[in-house]
Length: 187
Image (cartoon, rainbow, N blue to C red; front, side, top):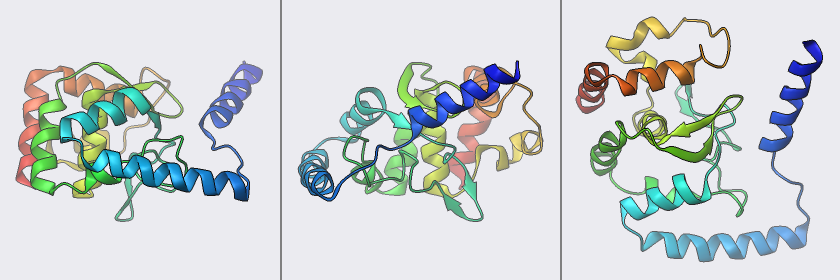
């Protein structure tokens, strides 16, 4: 059992880590990033969402939380701009907080699987990614919203009893989802 857990942890770390780059590769990546950013800036919010969440994807690497007033980190797909092979969410988050909040709230009921991985567990649903984006915008974790504080100190026991699973259950329940929507709108 310990071998299996070690193997899974190693596999997760390898699959979510960024590849090493050389100075030449960094130049090429920089050029691609500029081209990609320019084309992304002309897309609608919905088109950006489709491209970033469902086509490009990436890994959250545990950066989907607000810790000490800061969201994400350098390897989280929602905040990283270091690697052109990853999605660059900068043009998405350049929209106003009001516009983003309204758009993201509309995504909360969507249970479609994205191409965004939630380490060390599963790919995120569209609604789940929307919550993480709302956390980035408002610098507040979903479990810090008044109706969901009981999840704050809850300890996961496995992949199906984890923060990701709890959030997906909340989003699938129309009553709880409405409570969450009301909380995000009140911020």
